Length: 323
Image (cartoon, rainbow, N blue to C red; front, side, top):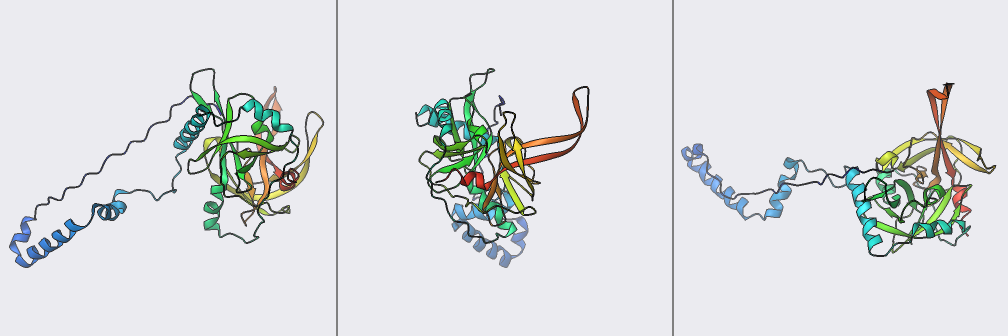
């Protein structure tokens, strides 16, 4: 996703506190009240400034950590983090990663699914640490600055292996590729471990990464509730819900065919490679593409959008890459 807009820098005003306080004039009329005020004043002045700040937090309106997502800040952090790794020569060239897409299978240990349903209020925070922003570091033809593309991915083991779509990696336009978690920690993609074009799956090894993985579940029956955490058009770490609506055979223009899973949970561009998760926090599939259905076509122009089909890679396609 190309963009030449500069991110606005956030500035914070420093809070200043004064221990000098004038006693209200009305207290002079009431000696007991005046003495009480003096005692309270002495106690308050002895409280450390750090505790005073804690007392003032509800008044100043600071948001609880992690309650708000700043999309511009995340995008800027990803670009700067990946650029820093690239300048430090800690990345793998994008062209080299593309040459590794012919690797068919890998030996990766993955965790077992617990099979315990997660409470709705805890589901998002439980799964979010395993979801990643995935993108290429590239330069456009309009400026000399580095940019990052926007896609999704998720950790499948603790040793730095993530899954994303084949088509996310299959692009030579750029210098390198990386991934970033919700805290702003950025990793370089060291290599492609295994991939399959027809299934639209790629397993990537992140360099020097210790991750919190999502387990792989069994095939989800039609009608099963599912959740997607992805980055639709730069709306990072967005969660949507829906159901598995059907399994079908997808045919490519080149004659290839592969099994796909359709779901009703919403997603959009930037969501490619995102996990489709059941209510236990286990992966049942991965976002791949969309297909729009229009009622009619006039003069080569499609009109009256009726439905958008959300096509996903079923979990079995990911398992086929694992020895």
